[in-house]
Image (cartoon, rainbow, N blue to C red):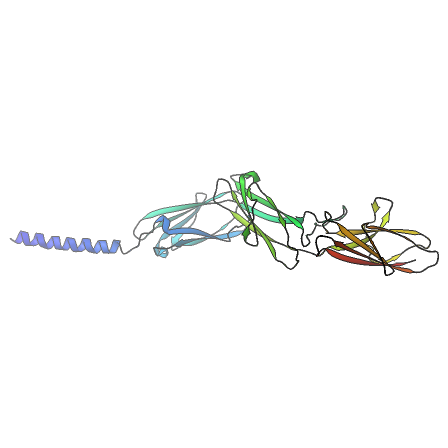
Length: 323
């Protein structure tokens, strides 16, 4: 009889202990690999730049977990609640593992690869005219067609991935532009007719065999075209100095001037209006030859250039000649 009572007593204790153990075990939420992710800031670190990796979870208090960060199979740091760790972007691909051990003893890990990548953008006006001696970039004017180039550098292992193996997705003012795709590292865009518009071009580049990507954007600034008046020497030689302002010339001589339509769309018809001493001389020629008299004096020369098709492409320059 006593044996049965003791047996029932120990069974009761055992059931109570098991129930309590189950309560303790399930009191710690289990962290599943799909419940957290590794975030990075800044999003696209450059070589030599410090970036921060941090864990983001939804169903558990990860601050109670034992976390270890490993870079290329070398332990960087280990500790409880170590949910973030800083690294420096290397010139080669880095492999980063994070190992998590929950308070209940469950273990799992996640791995990411940090691929060195960079991208830069530049643009130029396709139809924007600049003479051969102009050393700057051909700037864009309202109504011009602009070409935006992307220069991407994404390393796979030790080699830079060729552009032909990269996807380029282009956007203008946050709207996708047709014409992007594999290997399309530039895009041609027709600019609006108003210089007041903000034109932001962006591109997202990703390797063909990876979901990783990098993005960059650039603001295309539209400028007003400029009119330059220059002295002409011979039939094809131009002095590369702008004569706008004051010019000293010899009496009883011929002075040949040429108008330069800087940043105009030269595919369209341009109108040249030479005004000599307040007298108009509309012509399609950008060259004007003046015969200076024997007697000394002054002459004012003004040149206005406008575009038949694009109203916002116009400008003028003025020159005072002393002889």
